[in-house]
Length: 398
Image (cartoon, rainbow, N blue to C red; front, side, top):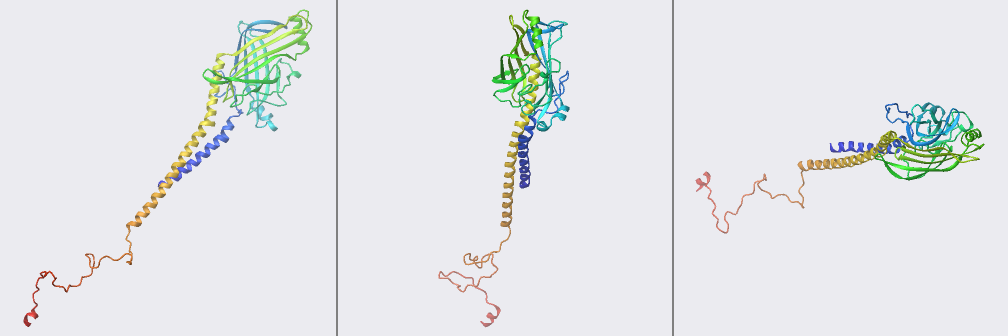
C-alpha cells in the first residue's frame, strides 16, 4: 500500500515540476506582452484592466491661443487630457510581415483646454495619432500607415516615424536609459533613469528627459502670422522649444503612475524681443495618480503571481511530493521484504543430521526408543535394588 501511494505522489510531483517549468518559461513570457484585447475604461472604470484617460493640470500657465483668427497670449489654468484606444481590428488587418503577432495598433488623442474661466472651454491645442507598438518593448515600430496630426489638417508633417517609448514602458522596466518620443520634435531622444521614489505607497522608477532649447520646424505662414500679431515691425522669426519631462514608472507593469512636463515655447522674431508662447508646468492630477497606481498594482500582482509565485510554489510542491513519494516507495518495498522473511522463518524446516550437527541424545525424553536394560544390578557402592518376585515356574523348581 505504501509503495502504491508513493508511486502516485511521485507522479504528481513530476507533474508539478513540469507545470512549474511550463508556467515560468511559456506562460509568464506570454503575459508580459501587450495584449490584443485591451479596452478603454468607461465612466465607472470598467472593465478591469482597461486603459484610463490621464489628466495633467498646469496652474498659472502662459499660453498662446488663437482667438477669432488672431494669436493671443493668455494666462490661466490648463488641463491636458490624453486618451489611448487600442485598435484590435486594425491590428488584425494591418499588422503583416514582421509586424504580425509582434505589434499592436493604438490610437491616441490629446486635448488641452482652459478650466479656470467659466464659458471659455475652447481647445487650446489638440492632436491625434495612430502608431504601432512592439508587444514586448512597448516601443514604436516602423509602419507605413502611422501618423501624427497636430493641427487638424492633412500635410506632409503628418508623416512621422514613431520610435522609442511613447505611452508605456516595457514590462519589467530596467534601471537604465531609454529613448522617449517627443511630439514637438517628432523624434525620440534619451530619457535617463534618475532613481526610485514612492508614489502613493508604490515604488516607481523615475526617468528624466531634458530637451534643451531647440528650433522647431514651423511653416513660413505661421511665422508671419506670429510676427504680425506679437512682434510689431517683425516679418518672420523662429519658434524654439524646451522641455523637462519626468515620468514615474511602476517597473513590473511598465505603466506610468505620474508624469510631469515643464514645457516652454518662445517666438523669436527677426526684430524685437522674444515672446512666450507657452510656459506651463503640467502634472498628473491626484485622481489620475490614484487610478494609475491602482491599475499598475493590479497588473504587477498578476504578473508576479504568474511569473514568480506560481512557478516557485509548484516547484517546491513538486520537490516535496517527489521526496515523500520516493520515501514511501522505498519503505514499502523494505517492509514487504521483511514480511516475506518472517513468513519463511515461521514454517517447519527439516534439516539432515550431519557430523557438524550431531543428533540429539538418543533415548531422551522425546525419543521413541526404549533404553536397554542395565546388567549392572549393583554398584560398587552396594546400592539397594528391589528384589523381584519369582515367577510360578521358578517356584515349582525350587
